[in-house]
Length: 179
Image (cartoon, rainbow, N blue to C red):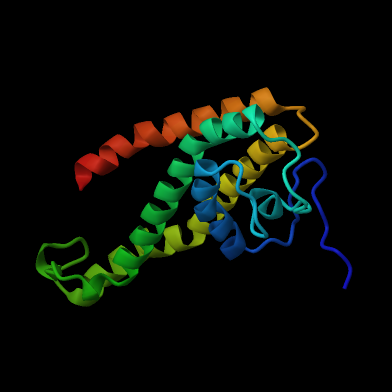
């Protein structure tokens, strides 16, 4: 079977499934905590590169761990939150606090379920894989920039990573207050 097509300069292939992106995004938190520990499922393998060990260790691996940790935490949190929204809204009738007379779309259970499924469940179901794929691509660019041979664009990628982590932090405040 021929190799899958690659997007030039991205370090990722175009045939990656959203489930593989999600697994790479969730595992990246542990990789950032242990920058010297590489295995068959290392960040380079998730970025689409060959997994023949790290190109750089020491200070660059530590810098990668420190810069990517906020992005990894944000990716894990956003992924968990988005999939929770899908489960809560699509499984509205199963919720223990289910009182359709006081819910949006009530007073019938069918109306409340339809409003929650159409308004929150289905849009998040379709959007979440793309959000996870974006986080995975950013994490792969950080791995390539810090631990690969090509450092072109590393300052820009680190700036994007900082902006994404800061934006997720700011947007988490209203979500936390809602809980």
